[in-house]
Length: 256
Ligand SMILES: NC(=O)c1ccc[n+]([C@@H]2O[C@H](COP(=O)([O-])OP(=O)(O)OC[C@H]3O[C@@H](n4cnc5c(N)ncnc54)[C@H](O)[C@@H]3O)[C@@H](O)[C@H]2O)c1
Image (tube, rainbow, N blue to C red; front, side, top):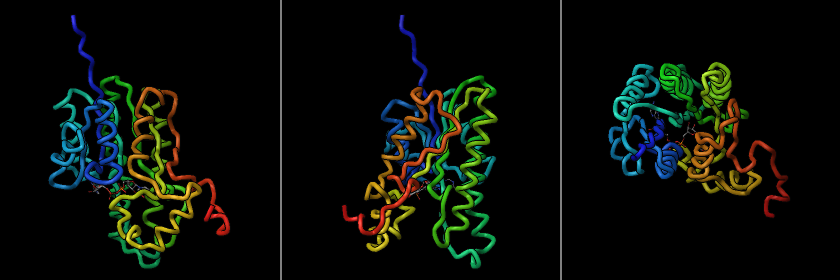
């Protein structure tokens, strides 16, 4: 008699690019049924090309769209176990020049979008009595700023506290919630910085490990946090930043 093993179903937002795409690939490689969501029209093809099972066009800044994406995943695959919220945007300007729309848009995608998608999955997990987990992608900018980043750092600081709030609310339901904080990672979000040799040299020097990070290096930590190996980890802030937040080397030692 064969017993069918139920697959682990994981939703990844921002699945069409950068860190989200790396998470789709990594989680699919370990055997999860991965549902990717993103704004881009060809997300289904992109997610399937990464090894995922389904892509759903979704604007995470709409709570109705997030609810619909989770409902679609449940309809297709029976349930959802984990969600990784990697959809995010960054628009920079000095605080005094930041306009209302830009400010709101950054908060809507980065904060509201993380909450709406986590809440949709949390409601499903609680209603069905399933344990599960949420990984919110924060940033080193959950903790620190650089010039012009007022909207982005405010949103990422909120994501850190969102993770703690959800971890406390949902701990008794067996739902773990953690925040992963990437440092400087080579993705399209950073394309302009990576095209500037001075800035990229600074980024490499600034991190104690002496280099920027790759999306796969964030995805591997997400894979850990969404696994049974992290069964007693919740409410954590996990930096994947080459040591950026730990401190910096004086200029005389950056050649080492
Ligand atoms: N790259 C870095 O250095 C870095 C560092 C720290 C934190 N992060 C965070 O990691 C996350 C992923 O960033 P990335 O570097 O992979 O960026 P990216 O630009 O490569 O990918 C972001 C994805 O999110 C999608 N997206 C944007 N708005 C959306 C919306 N409203 N609804 C659904 N999808 C939407 C985009 O279409 C894109 O596919 C973001 O939250 C970002 O803030 C990135």
